[in-house]
Amino acid sequence: MKFSKQRELILNTILNSSTHLTADNIYNTLKSKNPSLSLGTVYRNLSQLTENGFIKKVSIPNQPDRFDKNTHTHGHLVCEVCNEIFDINYTSIENLYNYLKKDGNIIKSYDIVLNGICKKCSKNI
Ligand SMILES: [Zn+2]
Ligand SMILES: [Zn+2]
Image (cartoon, rainbow, N blue to C red):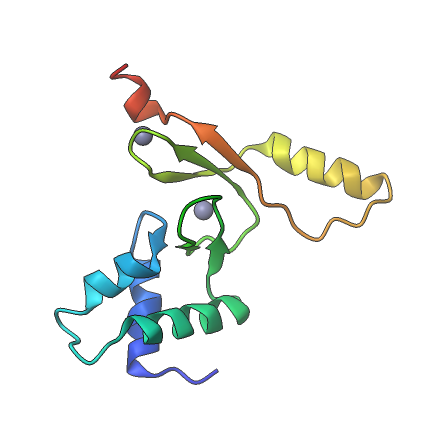
């Protein structure tokens, strides 16, 4: 895959972020220094980067897609208070996955989304 300057900027924005950014987030971060960048370009590059395995798309019901630098299979916790999305690296999910596989099922990937209130927000309720 060819890397244009804009594609590199978009990828680096995701790699340097500690959160799961939306296309809008990325566009808003980059547009002031890159006036020629359009939202359409951001979307196009994001889908190409996803297709080529550089990043992962996270689909959350009723929310815009987020883009994840963590390309390993993992679950997510969506906080209904701060709207942040957190990675879940819990071995039980991995165990379930391996169990189903050992049992003869062909599991290609999983996409687990848990809804709730994150540990930071739950302190304030
Ligand atoms: Zn929260
Ligand atoms: Zn993630």
